[in-house]
Length: 131
Image (cartoon, rainbow, N blue to C red; front, side):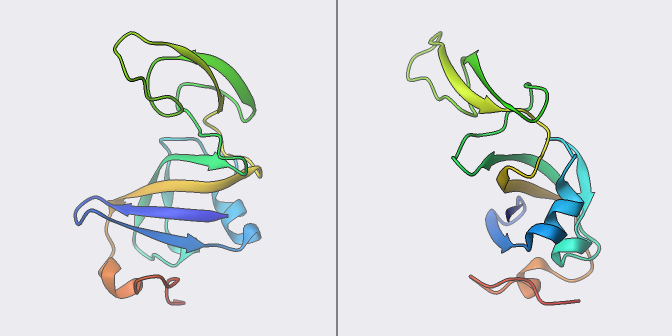
């Protein structure tokens, strides 16, 4: 399971390839919009807000769809559909807002920063240092 961490202060994103058992225990059962502790993925002192994700087939999660399953819904805005004209609607497959074991990528953003700067924790293209 991948976790993509967005640093909104700097405008950078960092990817963490977590072991499925470690990441699953932290994220499974959580919903889009929940705030979790970053200790499990090596970010001690950081708080992370879940902003979305996608499953193994690339189907995006939507905050306004309940549950964990895939659904075909009529949508007019992202995520899942980006209309080229105002007022266009389309029936698309999306996934609910709750994280399950079928999710392969989770997107989070940093809400609280720890003592150590994130640039020191991550080197470009590398996983975080062990604490």
